[in-house]
Image (cartoon, rainbow, N blue to C red; front, side):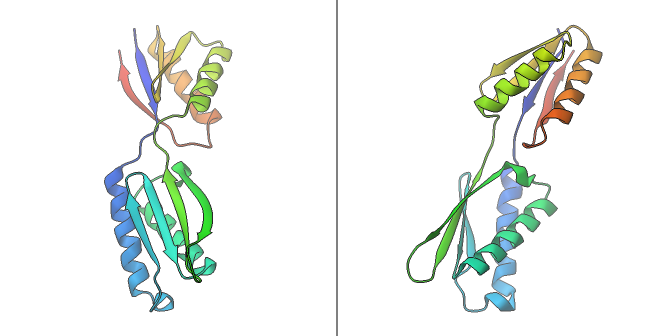
Length: 161
């Protein structure tokens, strides 16, 4: 039975490269001269540090630009609140979301069931597997999901006959 998986993955190496490029640009820009502005990465969490809120926004914009140029979809980033960490220093946590969350997976399965296509959807951990009898109906399901889910980056993998 033909099937495919709907997943949400982010290339960790591209994120690391974008963080390195952002830190290099922050280090060479004149408006950041003498400031403690930087981006740190630990696992799936990015932390922005700066001297004030304005510089924090600038560091965030630089990072978003670098991520976009490297092909990382910024819709998978979840920006936290800005925190004061002493003196005038501030920081912000950015979480890189990978995998399809349960609410979104249920929404995708419900969407496929309500579409009256002859396909079945099932939740497989942090992915959604869609299976059907014909390849054409699976391609219609892909187009339906692409049109309907625009708030989170999705990839369609593992297409099997």
